Image (tube, rainbow, N blue to C red; front, side, top):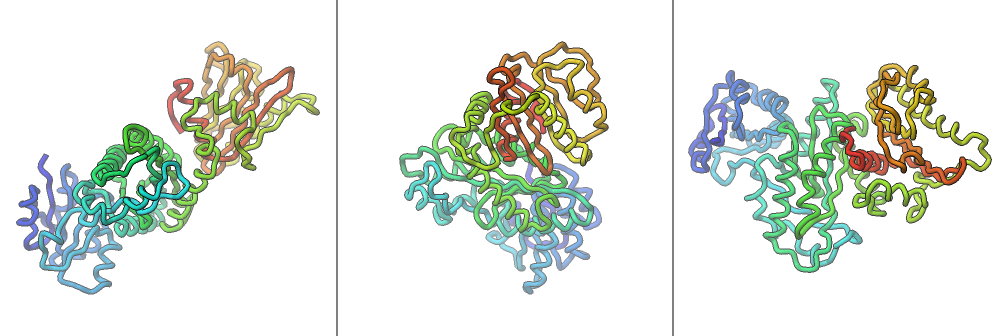
Length: 465
C-alpha cells in the first residue's frame, strides 16, 4: 500500500518534499478532509494554518477522531503563544515557513533509550549504564515507527485526553512500561544490538495496541501508552496482551530485559495527566517492593506459589500474612464460608463496578452455603466463578458460573481470589488435619492478579478479567 500524506491549504513545498520520500500527497479541500481520513493508509495530515479557516478547531477535530495520526501545522507566525495553541489543539509538530526537507518529517523528534538503569537491579553493571545514552542512539530516529511519539507530544496529548474525558464523561487509561535492566549480560552491549532490541520491543507493543492508542516516551525515558475510552479492567487486559507480545524480546536471546508494566485510569487514579503518570510510576515502585517479583513468582507454577505462601517463608510484608485457624474455633469451616459471603457483600455494595471473583468450594453440591447467598445477590457487573468437584448439572446459579475441576489439591484447599476496581483480596487455606487449616491472605493487587492469571493457565481456563 502506498503511504499517503494529506495536505490542507496551500502547503507550499510539501508535495515535492514528500514525493521524494515515496509518499503520495493528496491535496484536500477543508470541507472534505474528514471523509478522506476514513480511508486507510493515511500516515499524516499537513495543515497550512495561514490558509485554513479556524485551523486549531480542525486540528482538534482530527485529534479527537484519530488519536494516533501525525498532524503537522505549518505557519508564518513565529509567536510562542500561536505555536503553543497549535500543540494544545493536538498538533504533533509546528513548523515555521518556509518548509524544508530537514524540518518536514513524520515523527521527526524520536525518543532515545533510557539513560539510567536502576542500580541494584538484576544484570546492572556500570558498563551497561555508560553505554545507554542519547548520543549513542542518534540512529533511533531512523528505525522507530512514525507513530511512536516524543515526550512533548505524548504529554500534550495526555492533557488533551483529560479534557476530553472530563467533557464527555469518559474513561481513559495509561500504561507505563519501564525497562528495568538487561539480565545476565556479561559483555559490552553493541549500539546496533541495543537499537535492534528497542526497535523490536516497540514494534511488538504497537502491533498489539489499537490504532487509536497513542504510544511514546515521557520525560524520564519510560514508554507510555494512552488508551482512549478504556476503563481500568480494559487496561489490565491490554497489559496482559503486551506481556505476551513482548515475551520473546524480553526473555529469549541476548540481550533480554526485565520490563515492568503498570496501569492507571481516569478518574479512578487521578484527575490530571501528571497525577496519573505519578500514580503509574508509584505502582512500578510498589511492584519492585512486592513479593511477586522478590520471590520470582512469575516463573513458578500456581501450586508452588501457594506452597511458598502457606509456609510464610521469604516475605514479611504486612499485607500478606500466614496464619492458622482451627485452634479455638468450634466451626472453622463456617468461618471460611463467612469469608465467601463477605466477598459477595463487597460486590453487592457497588454492583455496577467490574471485578472477577473465584471461590474455591472444593465440592459443588446443591446444599453449598454460598449458593443461598448467590440467590439474593441480584445482577452485577462482576464475574463470579464457583470452583470445585461435582456433577455438571444445572445448579441454581443465576449470578455465577460453576467450574468443575477434578484435582485432589483442590479438595483440600479453600480459596478466594477477588480483583475489583477499588480493592483486591486473596485468601488460601489448606487443611492439615481434622479441621485445622494453614492459611495466608493478602490485599496486594499484583499478587492477587498474578494468582488469578496463574490459576487460569494451570487449568486452561479462559483468560479474562
